[in-house]
Image 1 (tube, one colour):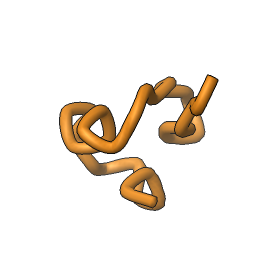
Image 2 (cartoon, rainbow, N blue to C red; image 1 turned 90 degrees about the vertical axis):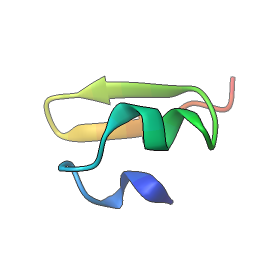
Image 3 (tube, rainbow, N blue to C red; image 1 turned 120 degrees about the horizontal axis):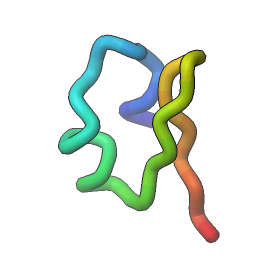
Image 4 (cartoon, rainbow, N blue to C red; image 1 turned 180 degrees about the horizontal axis):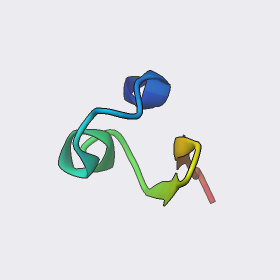
Length: 31
């Protein structure tokens, strides 16, 4: 997934699906 690196921009992850950004980075939420 695009969320492997915490340095990526939220917009890049959102393009793949709904994402939730946390202190650990970001996690893709398919719900």
